[in-house]
Image (tube, rainbow, N blue to C red; front, side, top):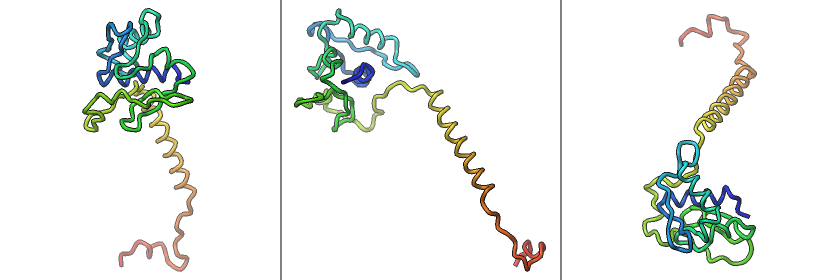
Length: 166
């Protein structure tokens, strides 16, 4: 079953590529201008998402796809990455799906020279995690260094012999 956050991510990624959602039986389309605002989805995207979940949106689907948002939220569907473009696509849990990707009508996609769409990232949490891992590793290295046997001077040599240049 596709969880709400998966369907939301699916729409967010495609919105970032300029794909609108067709709403109200094809009478209009919706495409938020901003999808990500720092470490979260933009207010505009959140408003759009709430509208798409409401009965007022009618039957709605991503342009280039015929799977309705309502259908994707049922247990019949899951969201997986497209083998061609790595973008999220609907996949039928059981049975045969048409395996069409909304990228089919995008002649210049995938374009590896552009950054791919993404989900919001909380930089503070990400950086804190990196800091904690580095701190943990530095402690491990320090423990290793102090517990390793130090080289012992040769018993037949004097203290001065070790520091004389050859």
